[in-house]
Structures are given as C-alpha cells and as structure tokens.
Length: 270
Image (cartoon, rainbow, N blue to C red; front, side):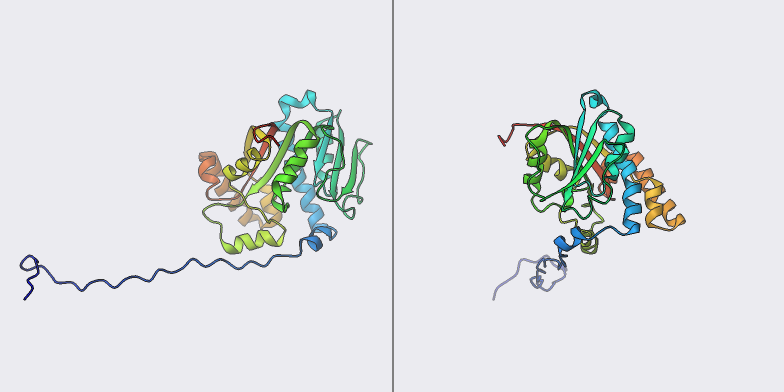
C-alpha cells in the first residue's frame, strides 16, 4: 500500500486536466486593387476633404520649419494629388518655388498652378524625376502609409533634398486597433500602420535623422466633416482632453497624426 503524504483533513482535489491552448489565427484581410484605387479621380466629397485637411497639413509644415524658413527657397511635395497642401503653403511662404508630383497624371493635371509658383506633374511612383539635392525641403504628408516599399521611397526623398525632409503619417496602431479598423484603413490604401515609435524607427533606418517631432490632434472641423455635430463635439472633447493630459497616453488609445522634420544621415551608409 502506498501512503500519500497529505495533511489530515486536507481536501483531495482531482488532478487538473491539461489545458488546450488556442492557436493564434491570422486575421483575414481583403486587399484592394491599389492601382485602380490610386488612379480613380477624386469625387467632390474627396476634394472637399483634401481642401479642409490641407490647411492643417500646411500649418504643421510651416510651424515645424519656422526656424529654417529663411533657408527654404525650393519645395517639393511627393504625393501632391491636386496640390492643395502646396497652395496652402504658398500662402505661408511668399518666396519659395513649389513643385508637386503625383503617381500618373489623372489627378495632378486637374489644377496646375497658383500665381506661377506651384507646378504639378506626374511620375512613376518609384524614381523622383529630379537631380540629387535639388530642393531645400522635400516632404510627403499622409503618403508613407500608402507606399509599398517604404525605405526606398524615403531614400528617394532624401536623395533629392539638400538637407530637410518632412514626413507625416497617421499613427493607427494603438490599444483600440482592431482587425476591422485595419481593414477600413486598408480599404483607402493604408497598407502600412505605425505607432509614433515605429514611425521614427522607420525614418531613422532610412538614412534620416529626426530633428523635430510633433504629435497633432485633429481639429473640430475634421471631426465635423466625418460625423454629426454632437458626435463630432464629443470626439473632439474626449480626444483633446486626453491629448492635453498626456500625448504618450493619448497615442496609445486614439489615432493621431505625427510629423517629423528630418535631416540627412549617413548612419546606415545609404
């Protein structure tokens, strides 16, 4: 007989059965035809959205470049669409010459110039059709999340810039990010998603050194464009309150736009 060393009066519990571990299953995404998505012309609502958002994007660029403004004479926007951001920048800066390029020509030829200082054209989406170090400032705002090959794209921005490169993206990865949210972003061509830290890592591993960094909250007008008045006001109030309390915490809960002004770096010898 085998005697078990169990204290008198202790309950005898059945041996627990081994737990079955549920495997992590990859989500199913429906990838759109990006070529067709990017070649279709903008409808009126999209035009209105681009005109609205361009004001804030231009303000971000003008503010973060303020200390370098006197050195900026030539500006290139990569992924300019119909040039709304360039035109807004032309209202901030009276001296520079502005150039914008967009994949194909269907969108870029729709509105070509403002007082002779804004020039738009198409390109192949891979090689920027300008010489090395041709522009004082090169920027891409809300473009990187659409780009199939991020680092070659950033390398091209770096190549044609004399010194300054500005990049802005929405940081859509946070605690509330779901598969359906990623699919919604994918439906409008967002094939890359970032946190603020992963965004900086992408820049720093692409031959760029982040000199200035900003997190931007969305204005009430942006929420109002997308939602009824009361819903827009509620979203704006909650997000702005959290943003004022802690930008670090806010970006872990909601999507915010993040911009970085970079200089050229030789860290990776690229």
